[in-house]
Length: 155
Image (cartoon, rainbow, N blue to C red; front, top):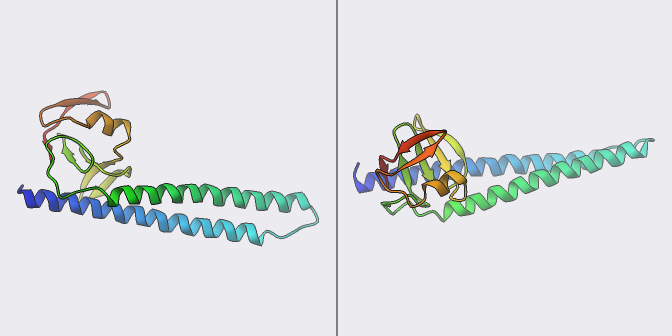
């Protein structure tokens, strides 16, 4: 793979990650709106406690989605700042790490993603696995799922 192909591949992974996060943001925005609408439309009944409980539940649900929304926005911001135009010789933020049975993109915490029929683990640089990988070079190994895994390629 040429330098330009490596950069193009990482850039395509970044774009796919940005799209996934933007989808999450849209979903949580809709959920926030629905929770607010449900809280607002809770009918006042003769049993006042039921009304207050329903409104409180709606507000709690809205707050939960608002926290998720904030996390997604922070993750989007972090991923937007990842530089995919560099070819790295050691594992770090923005690096793609290929191993015999797994591939990792250290950029955003999206978990397993199927990209072009290939399973890629998108890792936030702050996760324990990413911290384990950080600084490693081609030929180094690390313990993952109780298996010693060797790094075949980093770029």
